Image 1 (tube, helix red, strand yellow):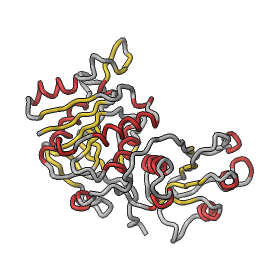
Image 2 (cartoon, rainbow, N blue to C red):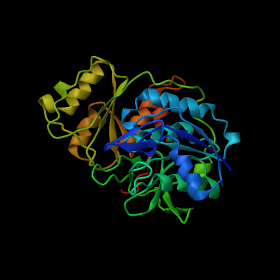
Image 3 (spheres, rainbow, N blue to C red):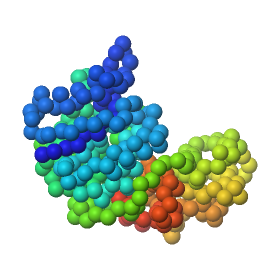
Image 4 (spheres, rainbow, N blue to C red):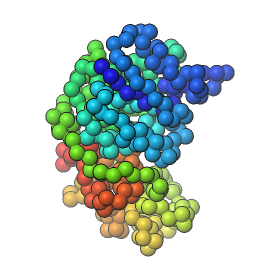
Length: 344
């Protein structure tokens, strides 16, 4: 059993010194040492460390590095790939890698840790062990994240559906409320649900949408709504490739007049030739709030049933490739990031 381990830093690659958590060269390979001490030599690990930083400091430059490493990986040499990552931005990298590498004929699993290795509350080694067992014991390709929550369950997330962790409990969640499954006694137990793909559906993905390497050079503007968001404070002179504006859970945003008007801001972006996206709509062909109708009539492009993390990653890919139009790329359900609507 051969597994490629890609270390990127984060809490799982950090240590505590004088009450400060940070990455350092001394702690970076502790994970493999701890694993071998507890579980023995049951796996051959090839370990590389292309990045070593806390994930809150990630920029698209680090995404470029990860993509380059994965493109150069010979899947015939390995049974799977494990990427260790900081928990803060894990869902964003997870979604990006899922949409770009779901066709890879071996599983790619991202893991993180709530505390540095060696801390009594750390779940990093357990998350890593479950990733190893998923690769060893299951015949499932695709891209996933595995993380043990406070409830003790080792949750397996589809990479395009894992949501940012709660800022109090540090708990991740799955978009749509249903994870892909759990690791129980080191075996995968699927969570059967109409919104989840089957293993056969996942394993049937074997062709990449994009054939050429891309580099993230164009930025997009992402906006989260809140009561009293004044759009006059937003300067568009930097000319983003597009704007992604999130909505409240009812697919709504402020449609009052004046400085707080989202429709007016959409119109300003259109006048500047900037594509504008709204996320997420449950359905655009059924009953909706009047404010939702106004937003759609303003000319913004709706994204359906997709998490904010996946929407951000998808648009970033779409506007940094030149093989197909951005609209064509966005229209594809690349790796189950769009959930079918069973609520109407």
